[in-house]
Length: 193
Image (cartoon, rainbow, N blue to C red; front, side):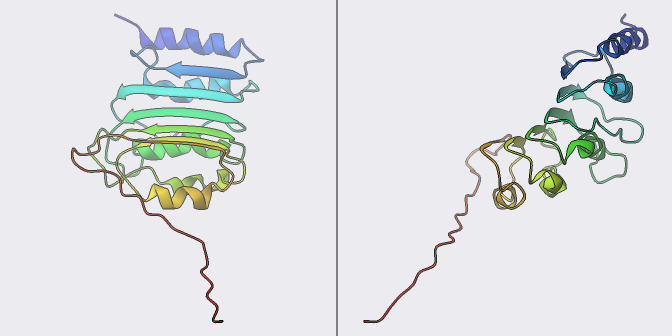
């Protein structure tokens, strides 16, 4: 049986030995580092000039403990968040996800969020308005979510400088599609002759 504390300690010490690390990817395919050890992972990377972080949780149970503040100063952040719990409760996995993103909001140029509620809570999606502080710097945004057409109205408002956008809806019920609303800013002028 794998000793998570021992394995995690080795990885965290290894990361501390890389003072020039600029990009790091942590993909949790099997429990090499339990999600509960994310605070130690973040701490082990704080001394680096990290610009890019890729974090994938794999399918996990909800996070225990208070939200962990993520790294500040990131330019590229990619999070694949496959954790389901009661998002509306304090200390939920959604609050944890917000905590990981918040410190880099003003520096992000490239953001990928794959927030999968596993179709259990479609009424409680990730709130894109939370990302408003990234509106001036963000140029690339990739977003995977449950069916929610309101993002089509929110994205242009909060990210006016995007040059690349990717939206993927998951778990769209058979026979339904996302409703597209087209807003026109054309002004029609008429003149009588």
